[in-house]
Length: 195
Length: 257
Image 1 (cartoon, chains in turn yellow, brown):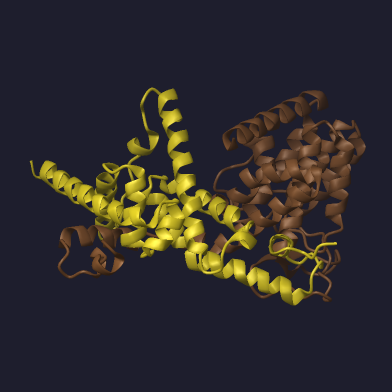
Image 2: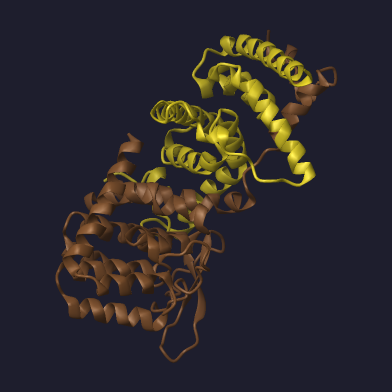
């Protein structure tokens, strides 16, 4: 009989199949990874276009997917694997949103919903985010992902390569290209706003 | 170009300040604090339900349902009590008022004190009110993540059995649920039990179960659901209820593909 795998340990906390100490350690591992990476995964999903209302659900699914296979994830590379799953989830979300837009005659409900009134500081932050998202929308998803992982989440080229399943050398050129497009998009947006 | 020659804009004082400001805004964007706090619990529950799905065929259907409905909706509706209200809300939407305080139903007591042989870990727990004896005042015990996950899995097994017209299996699952030490989803279980009993045309037992619950929590949304279920002809109500649930399941599963 084979010994219990890491997945089983994680999946049945409190089942009594393993010594309580081991189960608690597994729980602690899950908790530590979630606490450390949740906000980053959530941010990444948001910048890839997942609406705020869906971002938590999407992030939870990403974690459940990756942590269920934790035995296959190299220790220390959890963030890269989480970002890989998040990238795929965001692509799926985009596709389903696209289908929904077609069905609803081109109206994107996420765009027409206006945000509730915010206090000044939060309002300024929201405005910045709206500008950021408009600029990011001008980039292909792959470049947006590279830019966010490099600039915001601080992943190394190696981690980005692992997350986006790219050759390491390609990451550098994509970061450069993404920066150019992003800067152009921000400039264009500012120019339009000034008119 | 290597990483060494490419400084991140946020760390580069020579980078365009406007672009840095935008990136700062992105870095400061974060999930709601409640979502952050609950994330380990919800994700842990998802893992448990997924594993339960892999372990038993009945739980497999239940787990898919659970993942996409009950467990994830805890976030939106205020965590555990949201899950308790879920089934009833699906069964009879008008009976459940939005925004109504969801305290009464979670306080409905029946379970016994959790055995002390395996103390609950201090983290990842949700408070549950239980009354060990009718005469005793309700006491707070800790339902561990595993307890809640087992409860959710059994409830969903019961729901799936009911969806497939197998009311006896649903009652079996609910009987197993009764043996759990701490119960946070009693109201939902009661609604399912009454529906299963109605499906078996056991009106007397259905009324008995409903009366027991409504005596404990007369103003809860589930009590309203139970009164409505029992006030209408059995065939009509069961058909409508099962058909609505089937539709929801099919939509959920289709959206996952």
